[in-house]
Image (cartoon, rainbow, N blue to C red; front, top):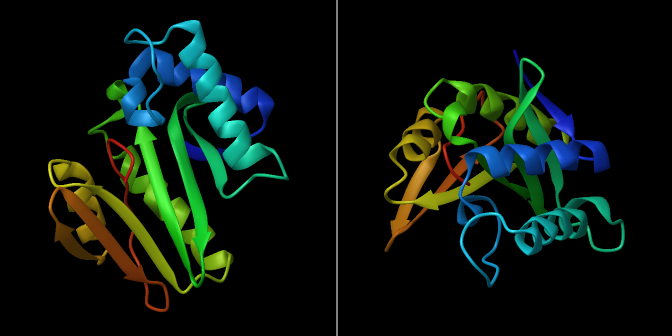
Length: 169
């Protein structure tokens, strides 16, 4: 069963474990100088990034959830308000990709977006992220491509489907 757990300190620790076990740092956080992989400095940067964006009331700009499947953390989902829209983002660990989890997460995020009163649901991905593009198009989102960036937009006034991605949308 797929569920979203609101990010707090214990959930953040579980999210870091999922990232270290199943994602490249560049898939789940901004670049950090240093050796590849997950050295201590990058792990600390991951924690600081999420604390600043979601947990610290003085700096939070988005709501973030840990994606849990049968009680195990497998990724993160977020919604960031932008005027009448919410920008969605999802990343899944490698072993969770291609199993339909993204579609379930998208349905949960769409429900959260509608409950927040947002008029539009937007997301972005890369041209090469075929899974995310198919998922977003399957929701009924209009896709616009500019270079390697693909932007999806779905008006929330109409009935929507479900969806998600392998990397950040």
